[in-house]
Image 1: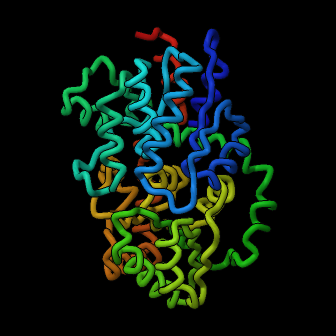
Image 2 (image 1 turned 120 degrees about the horizontal axis):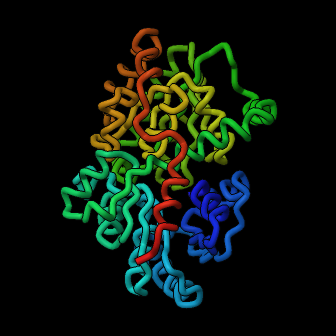
Length: 356
């Protein structure tokens, strides 16, 4: 949302306020700092061992108070988090038109990803504006009987943010970034890994880690795994990879160092949604450790491969990309369908065209 926040701040006649819920408080401050954003409101809902029920009710109650005090003409939410779903519901109850940024992503399976698929479908039913990143996302909304006049194909703002960082921030801080990872050996190829999906908690994460252990045993790669703060994720990583050579289990990274790691990587293994868009923008092949994805455009374009959490499949596909230069090159050069870095401007032009 950072590019949208900046575009709204620059728009004539718009008084934009930023409210954060603090659902992931540790990660939030890092991103706000990189993009120079100071929130006007912070609900600070995060607490140890929080449940989805707690997040939902805390955001719903907190946003009800914010909306009553701010009386906005419109509200924007992003993506498929529980925060977005609960905030959209609060807006609906308050009679405030909601714009959904990154609308129309679908797997049609409420359990994969869970709870994100339900979150975005619910948000989609409540939204007045639907800012779809691709034409395929637009078509998914039309199939759900969403009025076509309320759907706007904007591209994805994640590409705006990535371009801003790689073009304007990273060039002056390359040396600083390298010192953060003293173990990095530029002569060895880097495999960057993330994993945090709840549907992979029951054995899936361990299966992925077993594949990583096999890849590390090659002896010619380094594996970097910024481990999510969720204790279930940490336990699986430590159990399988805690003593593995050439595997670096590190803390979750701020946005800027993580972008640097993506640029360094030879390939990326992830269950993240956004990384399926970001890494291909940097020319990095992606293996997605999920059975289905709400970003089928990337599969069709050839920038990502779905492997699920099958240990053998992950190892085989990663090995192919490490050993077959032509296969790696083909994925690296495939067209990224998620935008040109101008999504935020398109969104703001729609909003400033008039509220309902």
